[in-house]
Structures are given as structure tokens and as C-alpha cells.
Amino acid sequence: MTARATRSARDQRGSTIVEFALVVPLLVTVLLGILQYGYHYWALETGAASAREAARRMAVGTAEACTTAEAVARVGGPAVGSRTPTATVTYVSGRTVGGVVRVTVTFDSLDLHFLPLPDDGRITQTAEARIENVPEADLTC
Image 1 (cartoon, one colour):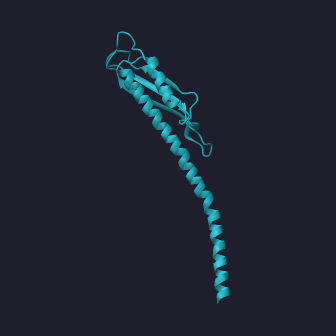
Image 2 (tube, helix red, strand yellow; image 1 turned 120 degrees about the vertical axis):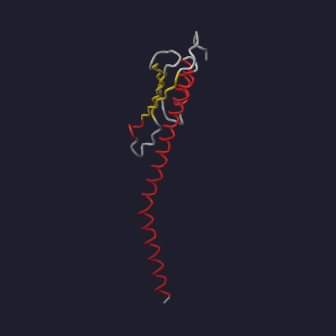
Image 3 (cartoon, one colour; image 1 turned 90 degrees about the vertical axis):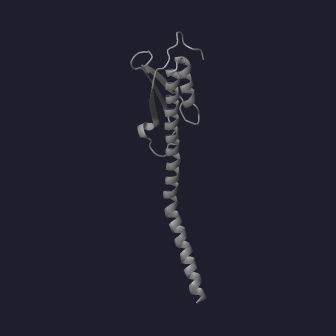
């Protein structure tokens, strides 16, 4: 009876190791996928917030050079992952009160090179705002 119980415990231990070996690769893949896509969605939100803030600043009359520099600085940090961010300002219906200003921010998301990212990790976010103030001269930074 004791020999049979010992053999059964040994067999069960072996099957536990096999089950663990089968489950670990799947678990690691899921965890790394969550991490990579978490970074990507964080970069998407950072780009959207940067474009929205830049559009808001342009709507109240802040200088274009200051606004684009700040938008590029927000998405150009090492945590976001971009080395070549760009911010583009477009006046949809002219630079007049009541017109629309559109800011587009483009940059590369941090890529862990584990799973493919949509658009190869290239993020483009756009925001629009109605112009409230057009100063006589551009405001300084």
C-alpha cells in the first residue's frame, strides 16, 4: 500500500511539471501582449491629449511655434517611444474668429518587438477647435 501511494505521488508530480511546461508559454505570450498593447494604447492617449491641448491653445491665440513645440515635446519623450514626432497646424476655414483649427500629431509608439502593432506602431491623432481669439501679433512663448 505504501509503495503504491509513493508511485502515485511521483506520477502526479511528473504530470504537474508537464502541465506547467504546456501552460507557461501561453501565459508568457498573453502577459507580454498585454504589456505591449498597454504601451501602445497609452501612446494613443498621449497623442490624443497632446493634439487636443495644442488645438485648444491655438484656439485662444497662442503662437503656432510654441504650440507645435510643446505638442512635439509631449510625444517625443523616451517613455512614449518616438524619435521623430511631428505636429502640424491647419486652419480649415482661415485664421479668423469662428474658424476651425486642426492639429495633427504623428509619432511612433514604443515597440517591444514581440507582437505586431497596428500601422507598424505609427500613431496619428487629430484634434479640432473653434478659434476664439486672433491676436494682432503672435504671443510669445
